[in-house]
Image 1: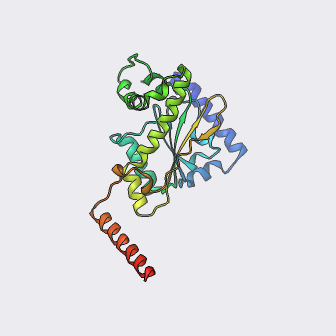
Image 2: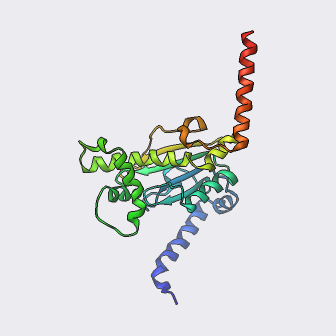
Image 3: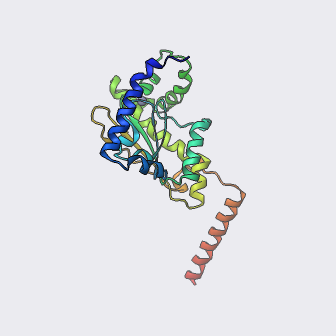
Length: 235
Ligand SMILES: [Zn+2]
């Protein structure tokens, strides 16, 4: 039998929380039950110190959440891809917010050479980003390097989200969807916009743009129509 005694404090806290929330706001749980139409998908770090809805001042039902170590998005992670697909195709979120945090332990570990086990393979993705932008780190101290890599990591993961067929399919059917990159510092919890807000196929580097035969036919048709319209205005 599992040792329930070790969880006793959690059950006690939970009952206390449930009662106090219900006392302050009697409709809280019935509202929560009805509400699963979030406008936002948050992709953040597993770091337990900040919860996604709290930092954005939203109710739990207002934000769909995916978390992993160092907020990484890779194209072979079916967990992350499934969350993305469900959030976009079924919940129809309008914003995907990739959020990093300065001083991230996962990013810090990626900057070091000490093996931590299996997770080394996961953090390899972040080492690749460092390697790609290595010259930017030349004159930086240790903490500044961690912070810069945290920012570069968010930008890279925003790009990775945009390179998925899931996001691109949504754009191709004109579904409103913007991918953002934010970062915060644990010392004050203030969110900073990294100013990467991508909402269209044309903003993705060409090599990553994916079209099937029907898409290509549609693009050709649009191009021909545009050319025809151009000609008729010339004459
Ligand atoms: Zn972290």
